[in-house]
Structure formats: C-alpha cells, structure tokens
Amino acid sequence: MELLQILFFAGLAVFIGIRLYMALGRPVGRSPEEHAREEAERARVNDAAKPVADRATPGSIETRPQAALSTVDVDEAAYDGLEAISDADPAFDASEFVQGARAAYGMIAGAFARGDVEALEPLLAPRVMAAYREAIEARAAKGETLTTEIDRIRDARLQEASLNGPKAKIKVRFVAEIAHETRAADGSVVSGDIAALHPVSEIWSFERDVTSDNPNWRLSAVRPA
Image (cartoon, rainbow, N blue to C red; front, top):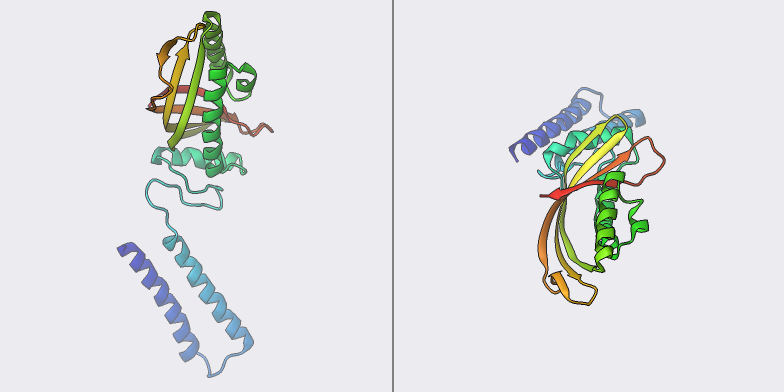
C-alpha cells in the first residue's frame, strides 16, 4: 500500500507541476495546440499509474500484452517458462491452456475407463499412450470393466513451465474428487466404490512443439502430487 501511495502521489505531483507550468510559465490564455499538449500530458500521467493499480496479487500472473498471458493460478517457478513459451508462440494464452487442460483431464480419464484407445491417441504422448494401451489390454484380457466419475476438479494450478528448443512443457497440479470402481466379468466388484468420492492430487505434464501447426498439447507424464 505504501508503494502504491508513493507512486500515486508521484504521478499527482507530475500532473500538478505540468498544470502550474502551463498556468504560470505561459501567457494567460491557451491556444488549441497548448490545450492538446496538456491533454496528452494528462493521459501519459494516467497511463503511468495503471500498472500500479492493476498489479496482480501473489499467486497469479499479471496480464502482460507482450506475453499474451491471462490471470491464472500459477507458482512463481513457472513465470519464466510461461514467458518463454509466449515469446515462442504469441498465440499461447495461459487461461485458455488451463481450460484445455481441465477438459483433457476429464476426457483422458473417461476414455481410459472405457478403453477407448482411438480417443486417447491424439491426447497422449507416445510413451504414455503405450502405458495406457498396455493397461487397457490387460484389463480387457481379464474381462474387467472400469467406471470412473469425476465429481469436480477443485484446482488446476500451473506448477512449472519450460521451453527446450521447440518443445514446450507445462506441469499442472490437479486436485479432483473422483470415484473409481472395477468390476469382474461376472459383475462382482474387484476394487473401488463408485459411490465413494476420494480426493486425488496429481501432477500432469503436458508438452507441445511450438513450431508445429497442431495447437494441441499432449499428456507426457502423470505422477502423484
């Protein structure tokens, strides 16, 4: 607050100084050109104060025109990486990325439960796709079925971000309430309980080649948070 007050009064002092100069340092009466200059100075003073008034709170990214980033939940460690990704891909927007990551979370969990390999293919990196395919095939071989219900995603926070060459990577910490249930071929419950929600905290890593025309991010790793 003290910094805000200092900058505000500094801006106010500049504005008052300009007005005094115009009133005392010039003949009485103003030409249209002088009026225009005064208005321009006033606009510059007001613009100088805007970044202070609009400063983002800790734990969020302030909107930077040059980075095209919107306000999102983000750890400080991810700032530089997100800036680098934005510089490499001007179309990148952190808010849109988070919305897409939330949607991908639900789609991937649902497709894995259904054993829908075709739906998973464009969403997963090759290594993750191979692991998911193996798990789906093992489940099918046993005649088991998996049901997954996501009640809600409580949090999706950008934890880390990096750009290595053309490869951008962003880690998202998800906290969700999920119910799982696996049943055998005869319908008996093998594990889980679809009626019981449990909090699940995981870190999902997404990656993308920023030089590619394909705007989709793929899941490259999952681990407990």
